[in-house]
Length: 414
Image (cartoon, rainbow, N blue to C red; front, side, top):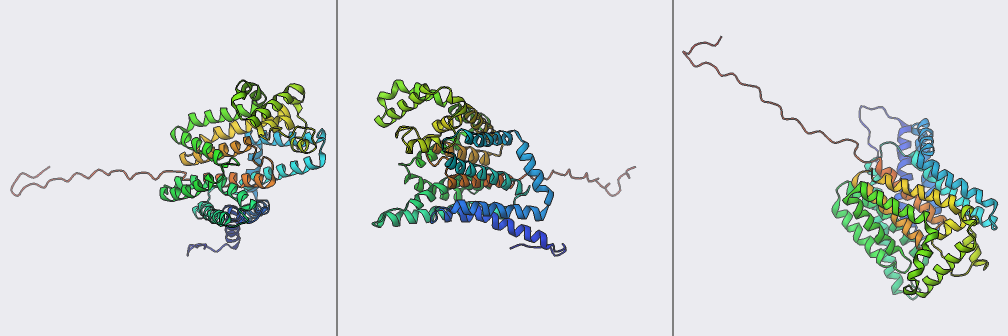
């Protein structure tokens, strides 16, 4: 409900902008995690709708602000690096042997990046707490709903639906902005309750790697909470280093391959063989979608690695891997300059998403890209909802000196 000041003039355009912003943000924060548990394409449909409503509200409220914010984001150093990565991915369509499927993959990537930039530009400079309260509310309801669906699925003969498992992944990654908002407002009990529900969900996803990724994110959250600047720099170096030096990993791990499981040792051997056989292709890559299609058409072995560390180098080469490493480095390092809880939440989300990609989870699938764009928008909104200043303490006013009156009969003061 929008309240008006009795003495302020009624502005229908401003009221419409506030309402559209509330609906758009609720679509991303409230509807998306819940709908993802019952629909496979929830993120694909709801993320563009939510961003479109945010853009319309921004254009109604102040038309020039959206364009200025978008221009500033695109011309920033991380923005230009990300745009360069997208441009290189589009250029790789020229030499990709699977042009049709690669074009679809590139379109999804461009759409997700465009939604992230446009949504962030459409958010106001000061985000209302009433809108941001929808972030933990949506995640909490979705977590409880997911637990109920998992219990019902395990008790039934049909088992748990794959759509529910995908929705659990959405809830897990969206829990980090919810934690960041609750802790930034000192709502410890609410954060603890959400942590219990999310922790139970994560325990059900050990086989596909979500539980391991959430543990990595939790470690990053604790490290950033202990020392923001040092931990953010260390995490940024580790993540960017893994992305940049990925072709060396199979050779470094081969000496201990005998102690690893047979399937992992076989995968490392295939990875090392591909790197040794085609060193020139490491510069340009083979083009988008060549790993998946190559595995399906048997031009690559069936046990070819599915991790993002291999796919980026194989498909986009040194240029793409270096651009991705720089993006991750500057993004995680910038988290160390944010407020305490927000910095920890952003770093944990980056580490969780990166760990999932390293484990081969939904790297470039459309629903996952849209979910990550929505999470980025929530963090941007939370950053703009933080207190900008601290309320100053009231100074102690010195008590005025009281002049003593002369006693009766005494000498009068001059």
